[in-house]
Image (cartoon, rainbow, N blue to C red; front, side):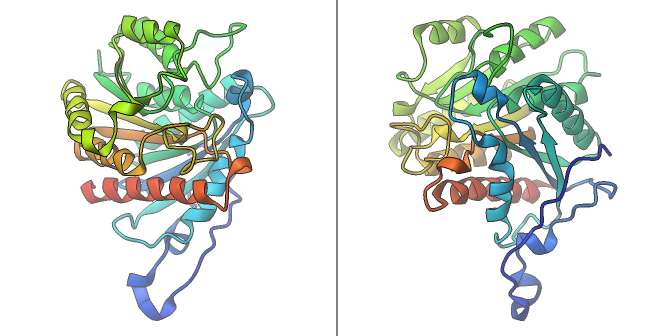
Length: 320
């Protein structure tokens, strides 16, 4: 197993009088990376801000993974009982590409060992690393049908500035990578804001065959239509990478991101999408991007991020 920095101390409340039914995450999470990881939900941090810096955003997401861990420690144990924390991939200075490559290697290894990886970032440059790991894992398949489901206010299909990637370019980079491999690029972006994406980005999304829904098309009264779009997308792929950019949520719910959303998608809708993706049985890896504790308000953002990680872990564990 690739050895990562893993000094985080899991802490939380202990309800010993309740026995096993009173357990919380901090009491069951293991940190032994050499152990059998099969059928585990495995947490991996991506401590990187460089993509946000290059995208001219608010820095601080490099501390996101540990801030989410701090909130997860007190989560009650339900379906997800086999939890492993393998530590963090660190970005050394501005060496973002090296960090993404290491992230890909670790994700590929976790998949090879039959774990389910949940990666916690970090800016949305995390996506290029996470997808790269899944691509490595599936590289022996001639033309794997991989689908990307992204909950995000932004397409993140920008062209590179100065020949460098950023938190705004990962899915365009993935599209290029798929073209090089001779693979289809299957991308579904839900929660797109018309006021946070230029006409050039909408044009590029059209050219790349992206499936999307706008944030104002994703209210609870429109949930049936949203899930129909998602079901149609999932029906045409075999392997799914699911990524949540937390800036898809309204700023009042998620202030702790690089670019808070003026409108956003309700947490109830985000969770319904999450549940649907997991229920497909095709989900292989997931990540959570852009949590920036520097701008959190009374830990509102941390609580929401931890809830999503725990919901995802429990949903995946139910299918193991």
